[in-house]
Image (cartoon, rainbow, N blue to C red; front, side, top):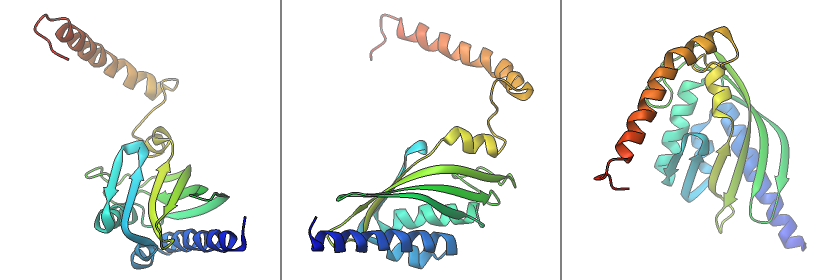
Length: 181
């Protein structure tokens, strides 16, 4: 690796570090300043893809409103020539509307997340793509229950007939001669 390459990677890492500092300060303007003009944000567990600076801004506006005490702790950094990957721990309290209508639960969340940061020609963030276990978040919010527990067994028992009925209707619809795929 040449000195120029090392300097460029160091500058990119500094952009990502500033980005996380702005997230922790809830500094939306500073956060947005780390992105380039053609920014994108991909929350893969929800298949939520935001394009352009306004799309990215809307994602962060919703996130910071739903978790007003959001903190991000960096656990590991992985630097490559085309991307920087962070392994982090997310913490916060669900105190605002999330995902377009889920009311606040008042519950704390803490979960691991992997973020992949890519860069534009000016070494600003071109994109941020995140991966995490959506089930863990939903369980911590009290909206998902493992089937091994009492409540989980109850929810499974109540929803199982509905799931089976939907599966039956789906399969019977697909077996009709006039059904087209």
